[in-house]
Image (tube, each protein chain N blue to C red):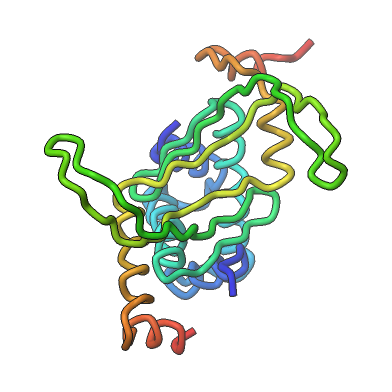
Length: 113
Length: 110
């Protein structure tokens, strides 16, 4: 199970009383503007979540993993995501509950979906 | 660009909603994503990318100050894999992004 745009729209309409079309419009616009912010400005900071930053990478030698043939990987511009402290801390707690024997919290969360 | 800029841009396009409602919605959407990841759930947004957790096994480390050896606990860390469209757009974007860049796009009437 993965969270998708449709899931986010559904939660939005449940929480704010948006109808389906309004919720979908909000979610689509959010991700469209996130993408254009990253592309246009080269960085986007979402406090409580993390930062997206673009950087240029020079060309480097690589290999076709199937054939073993050496090829040059061309210079390119890429986007990287750095999770913020708050998100990292929340995610690390997940590791704690999944590796413990009883894991009651995690089970309860899964069952309720 | 920061979250408040994003909210302002969205509010400009959603003229039927007060900016406060857009801000609440954006904060909620970010919270849904953070919540999914902290439950170990993946996030998949077509065109944008996917978020998942990477497992970091326990490893031997040492405190650089005292030299004391410590074993760090295993953990999970959030990972983002950009989608095809985002990868292509970023790759074709201008490496420089001067403040005036926007105007170049907006004023392009010729």
